[in-house]
Length: 285
Ligand SMILES: NC(=O)c1ccc[n+]([C@@H]2O[C@H](COP(=O)([O-])OP(=O)(O)OC[C@H]3O[C@@H](n4cnc5c(N)ncnc54)[C@H](OP(=O)(O)O)[C@@H]3O)[C@@H](O)[C@H]2O)c1
Image 1 (cartoon, rainbow, N blue to C red):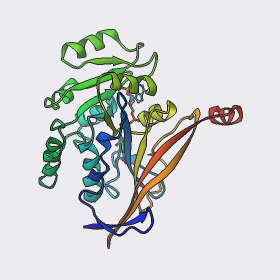
Image 2: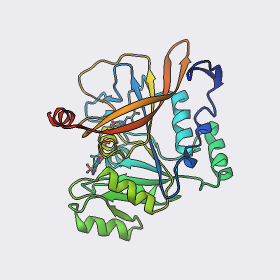
Image 3: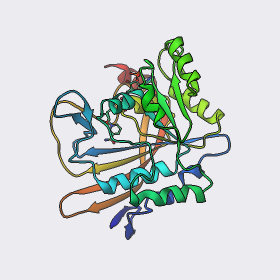
Image 4: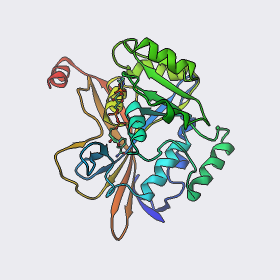
């Protein structure tokens, strides 16, 4: 069950179990700050989701999802105070199109993560924050998460009656933007609530929301060494980025298996203020 360390160079074989748990992401934020990280699995041609067989929903292709990456996904979840996801995830769940991505320790080989959290002084399950402008969130899906606090982040343009409905149900609503949730405001609201680490597990739109505001600290990216092709797909982000966003490789592991291989990369995200030419380039669609 080992992987080969490629970066930093000179590394040796490392056990898959514990590979990301050792990152200590829940302890990285300076006082009164938060460390926000995202994680994706993509094919070598950059697809994170393709259309389901019935053509109705975008889903993570079964040919790239795999238990070894899933273990690392959960190790990242284990280090979070809160997981950030989208309303669309809950809508997909209500249609039975998405597996449970928010609960730790459901499988026998991940119960150690609940114990690990307890040893670290963390509650058994991370809280959950749902990002939505429409507030079209199936309440019965939120009720499944009755073992932790669920919050909703939305904008002031959202429906006031829906906001009041969710507040009455016990889900605090954070207003973090005018017509869309703004990544920087959201980050501040999370800090104010005392969260120190947040794991973003939504798709390209929420990723863009954080990147555009310079609010994401790190990206974990699994590249599954297969090509998917096709014309309808999602990549890890889209939309203009008003800052020059550079990634710096922090670690890279090769997981070479007889039938399929993958690379596990961790990047730090560095934002540089864009000059006028760069800004002009970025805003042209
Ligand atoms: N391969 C992978 O690792 C991976 C990881 C994550 C997701 N995915 C896939 O990617 C696809 C898309 O995922 P997703 O639907 O979770 O992602 P998304 O594109 O990030 O989220 C879309 C929804 O989030 C809300 N939203 C996003 N940004 C917002 C903002 N700034 N303000 C207000 N609301 C905002 C909106 O909800 P409302 O419509 O309610 O306003 C929007 O419909 C799915 O097929 C998923 O399976 C793949």
